[in-house]
Length: 98
Length: 210
Image (cartoon, rainbow over all chains, first blue to last red; front, top):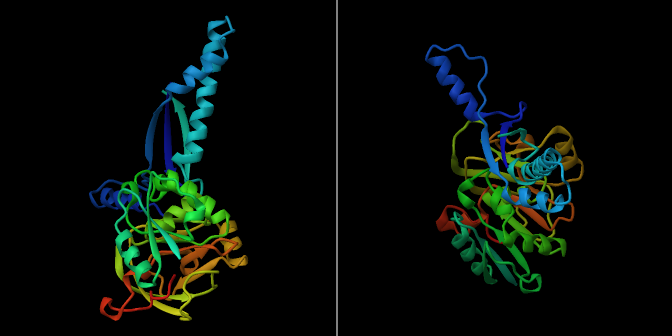
């Protein structure tokens, strides 16, 4: 199951990359009031699919099973994001299903 | 004393630190990033500078989660000394052993020059030369010490600031150049004491640092 994690530097923090890009854009005649540079990470969680299907093997309702798998996968993606992919002191994130 | 010197892929100051350890008459225990070690086999660990794992994700982030750092955490929890220099500082912040984080210099440029730092609080183990102002080289692009207001107040109130720059070279909050943990056995700084061991290096204020 694939998840997209969008990571941005916190507003209070000086984003030197964003500032450099913004300066260039303004110098080249574009009118940009703010430009911030972050990163986008795509996670494909194989393991969680398996774990979820093992745990929920008894469920007969296919849509229930799918929802359960997705929820477990999202939980895992959030855990990975918060423990490794971001540093909450300097970054914020949003997560989306792909 | 047996001092563990850690090497990650991308570390480039480990051999300088090895020379520093030897110059102080200690024995070097080389530690590779994939290795766990027995905490009884090491009396002190040093996390040297460089660009561990190519600074991928965030500087120090991947190194902080490597097997050898699990052992370093254990070592620190036993009260043994752990020193971080430059990238080692970034790594120790990412492990959570030290407060705050290092972000890009406010001027956006890599800073490579001699700088002066002032001792604020002493640790239990390091910088025992008695000098309160040290002239040491820095070389970093991401050395701006940052913490949110609440965290910064805590760092100041608890006396966790080790060194401050006498002239702020990178936008570090409160001029912070080095911090320590509450137990004062884990400490780190951005400047490089191992590059200032003898007069022929341009200065010897890094001598008696460990």
